[in-house]
Length: 151
Image 1 (cartoon, rainbow, N blue to C red):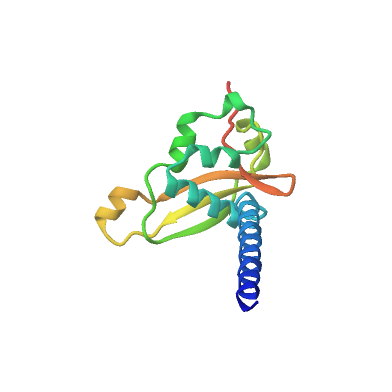
Image 2 (cartoon, rainbow, N blue to C red):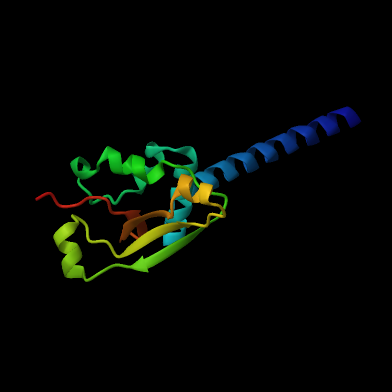
């Protein structure tokens, strides 16, 4: 009888562990796709850089950007080069809206920057000063705007 009880407890614990594991997996997948603040968008960008993955950066491009205006070269530039050990995330205002409307298919609201904090000339030569791309909101989430008007 004691064996049956402990087996029952073990099975119950396994079920609880499985449910917890699935809940955490589902929650973490949902959280990884959310960019409700520029900082959350930056976190996803950093993950894409660490993976050197244009596939991870593509879903972070503004949905209103026409697909034919998304340059594979710009996507690659967004994720290539790695990251130094230390960096800062900055958001800065962009120029006058009228000027931005002339250049971009989707008018960006801010510039999202990763500023590299390098310690040595070698690190500075390897990584540069950082990266920055314009961002805008759609449906309550932040996205990169890399679609410029042609001609």
